[in-house]
Structures are given as structure tokens and as C-alpha cells.
Length: 171
Image (cartoon, rainbow, N blue to C red; front, top):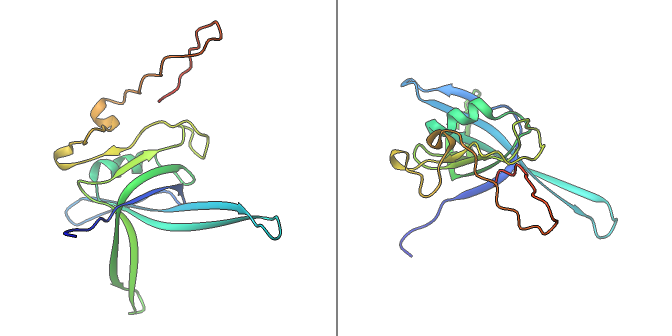
């Protein structure tokens, strides 16, 4: 095999508000933690069990960073695509440490809000993220920045209930 694939797809809830830092060149670096929970019923005891995995997310993509900074809040559900990256650093006590993060690179990555405008798990599905490719090409998808913020049209109703249903469904 000539190559390999490094792609991470996650759906989870923000564990904290996004934190924005700036490089000496003025580029924004946005970071936050993401919680992915799964629950099941224990076969032996019948109890409900839950396990949560945490991932550190770092956004170097300028457009997605602006969206994250402006719209994302602790508890919101998001879909994201990025790459695994491990970095080594020395902590304040002089110990060598490693940290593995999901990184949305400068010209790659996708971020989509899955919560409504009210946030905090209320459903909704407003599309606020997008993918960014070289020179902002979107490879078949477009972000609201490129579309001017318009919403997708609601599908036509196929119901035979004898009336027109005028739902405001965003997909």
C-alpha cells in the first residue's frame, strides 16, 4: 500500500467554551474539548451504564475557527472531521509530555453545529459549519460564509393527509 489515511469523524458535545489564542503572526488557534458518550443496559444487573470519552480539538482553519469562536458554547452538539496529531512538550515541572489531539488543519476539516440556534441539545440541525479546501474550495459542500447564510429548502411533502404541510425543516 502506497499511503495511509488519517481521518477522524466525531459527534459529541463541547466540554467547555472554545478558547482562542493567537500566534505571533496573528493567526487564531481555537481549542476546546469534546465529549462523546455512549450508554447501554448492563446484561447482568439491568442497570443503565454510561461511558464518556474526551477528545481535545484544535482548529487552525481560519474560517472554521471564526465560526467556532462566534457560535459554539459549552454543551452544544457538533459534528467534526479532522486528523489525529500527537505533539510533545515540556510541562511547567520540566517533564516531557505527549498529547494527542484532533486537528482541523488550515485547508482541511469540517465543523457542523447539530444543535439549533438555542444550543444545549435542543435539536434543530442548523448548518453553521462547512468544509474548507485549498483556496476555500469546498469539494461539493459549502459553508454559510460562502452561501451568504441561506438555509436549505424544505423537501416537498409526500403526505396524503389532504392538506398542505408547511414545515420549516432545514434539510
